[in-house]
Length: 289
Image 1 (cartoon, one colour):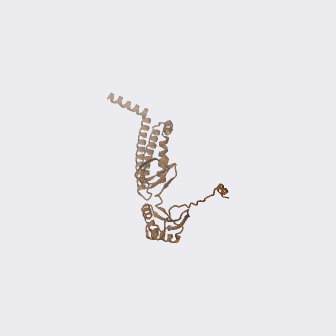
Image 2 (image 1 turned 180 degrees about the vertical axis):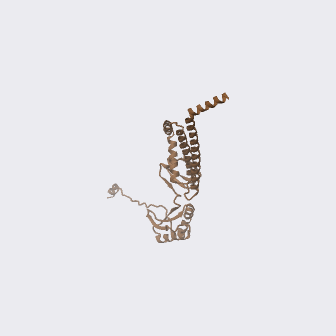
Image 3 (image 1 turned 45 degrees about the vertical axis):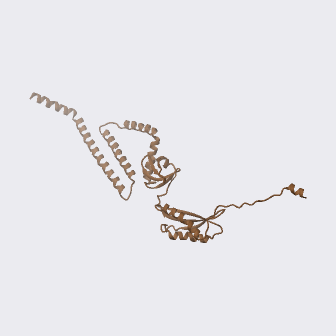
């Protein structure tokens, strides 16, 4: 009985002395649990929203969606950690200063890698090119096989593997032959000066009429491109979709010669006229006189 009274008195004194701290600690624990639950809920909701956006009409690239999910996840984690530390009265100003200094040091050490990441983010957000596009930059060209935050992987028409840092692509002018969905095809043909231009135009017009894969808009054109030293160049310009461009090009390059020859036209060889002038020796003329 005496022990019970002593213990009861001890807990009463302990409560009277530390009740404020105990209640504050419990409040901090409850606040921490709420922050964690809120962070988990917001993170899951954000990831579901990004996943839904990637499969909707927005058509966000899968690599961009994956990157955004990681950014949201770790961003919410860092924010929740800072809020929890502030809840327990831990000053985060010095911690942020240390992390900032460490970030600067790491950034200087990995500046090339970070520049590739920054370029990769820009390329993914701007969607300059996608998987399957045929691009050309800095003397390199090929079909895009993979895009990530560090490099872009290409495959040339010869089957050669090319891995290019994203910063090298972002820092140079880039041609995307697939992006617009269509390309203009130029087919130049040379005829002799003695041939009829109208007959050459008629051959080209027949090629246009017999090729259904040429687009009607813009309308194909046949023009006289230039007058050369040995020939007149006739140019056929027509638009096609990128998926059949090369098939049409090789096909037309094969049949143009046959069509021209059938129409009686010739493709002249380079030629040059040489004129010889014979000069008499002045001394021979003097002796003759």
